[in-house]
Image (cartoon, rainbow, N blue to C red):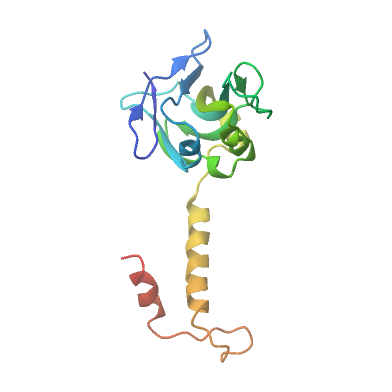
Length: 193
């Protein structure tokens, strides 16, 4: 095995199965997780197993798709109630490389309309299929699957600090100035202790 996935609070899964003869495509059905439990999963961790390297200049892209199996006793009519299993197209979750052998990725499942429709269909059982594709690093960079989140995190921190400081402003500074207590930074930092 080369790859692993962990859903916080769950067990490490390494049972990806090859789906092609080239050894560059794999899949893993997230069995044991269904319905509303799927929507509650906000992130997952995708990683290379210790001591394993991908081919030089390659990375592993992680995708997900919905698999819906119809309950044959129901007459409910939704896009996910046709006879036989229904599968959506794969959607990108994120990517890892030898230089970045693990990553925590947001799933977006809680706000995905197609998944919500499928979960709320009383006539079907929903599971998530994870797909992995080993691709050249240039392909991964071209679709933006590898990102440096440092700038994003810095912006979030700055906005949080600004909002906290603004909560003290009584408007007496005038001209777009904010008047805050001298210990505002200490008070802001204490919220994280």
